[in-house]
Length: 169
Image 1 (cartoon, one colour):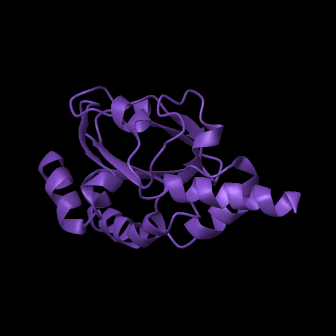
Image 2: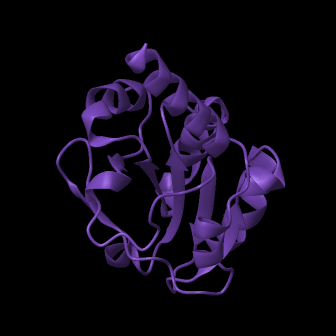
């Protein structure tokens, strides 16, 4: 019974994160502000460092394996990345899953061409733990946040993403 109660609490917390707006992350990601510092190991062992990508346009997607809206937009993100990476676009995914779920994160990401790591592994991590998912933000070549897409803005579409990214390339 204790195990069932704990599982229900986790599912309720997951539901409250996925698709509902939360102030913590959105407050740190304001259009015009410097991109947050995030340094983490990618699932393939490479280093993901947002500061090292200054001079490039970067799309950052924060997602989780248990978040249905996150999983629904990932194929579109991957197709967009494949289409525009030759023009200098970088896309990085950061999973909000726990480190113990690394194998499941890797399984999900095996279908996609862009790198991903776990926020839980990030040091530094100026994003913190997001209170809403999915969250996607666009960083310009100067290292400033230019657009933030979150659950309160509705479904992220290729048109919305193109409108934010293509003028920056």
